Length: 279
Image (tube, rainbow, N blue to C red; front, side, top):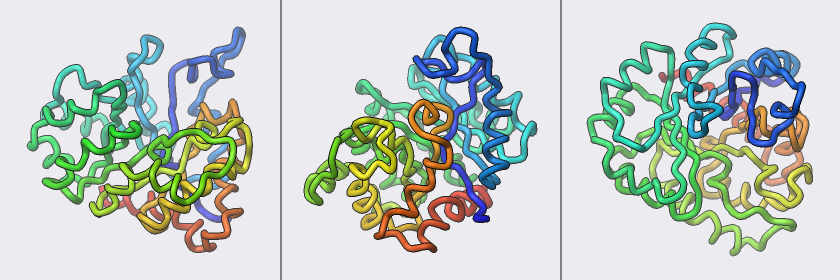
């Protein structure tokens, strides 16, 4: 069986909410235990746990993730940082001591310009330790990373969910896919940028339309720009389970004719394991 490494999962105390199955009356779930059973069945040896504390129900997610460190060998957490104030090296050092291997940023609603306020000392600290910077953003938001990456081209930026291009009901023409992903593919010139192939349920209409053929031209364009060595499978557990089964989050790559067997092996495990080994 191929060993896999998952580049984007969530673990929340009480389970993911936001109208998911975990938020239904009477449902009580230990997401870490649930994921462990899936990881065991699917030979997932490492998972990047993406912190998120942007809603009232998950405001203490970083603290919860600290409690999970060491509970299972596959857990590799990145800490959620809000942009209400610039973070500091002291804060990063504390997170490192708590077991985090990077940071998690959610930059929507015109928050991306806040990148300019982050001191270079922080980016330098992150780069020197090969920390991972997991980012959720979309459209023009990705263009704000250019000035940061010009100064720190090896910064290991992980673009979540293909960069969140528009959801489609049918495959777009190559030119349409290229235009939709332009702000992401422009970042391919910086060697530290990787893209997570995740959240396909949010990229196709309907979201349960496995194997999400409408999004394949997006994957193909990213493959052209980044090569298979900078693409990462990510399940987006547990939100994905409202739409597809866990194996369907990685089985779809075997159906894409433009990906070879070695490409799929790298995307679904080898690439992330290499990134984690360098921390």
